[in-house]
Image (cartoon, rainbow, N blue to C red):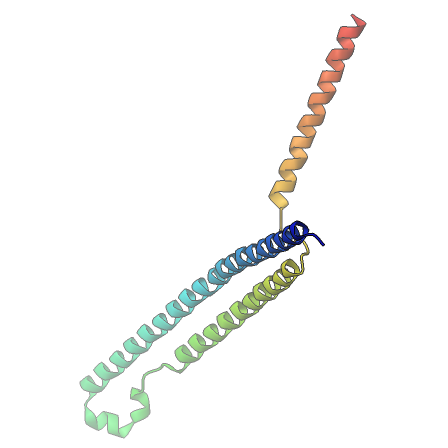
Length: 164
């Protein structure tokens, strides 16, 4: 083997590996953006639900405290259950909503990460990664129709000129 051939071979392989690494890096960035798009709205929604529940519990406790203060200690000692704040359903509903949102986000996130892993593995192995291109396909089809209609119009005008 010639030294120049070895250098060219190594250079080609390094460029190939570099391109694959670049593809994986781009894929990682896209995946992070998708994951962020799932996690941030979910956390905001959970935060809003928990904050709403906390406000409702606070108001319920405040109302119970005012009722205790107005009725007096003797009335509270006689029937303490009447003065407990009603917050059980608020806590359970907030918890259930948080579990539902977290579960849904977890399944979406798992799907995004699974797809990203498969695409990264394909890219590392040198296979093409299928990217969704629905909009581009529609544009290509319409431009193909325009090109076909232009060529048909050109043929008609050429035929008209030759027959005249």
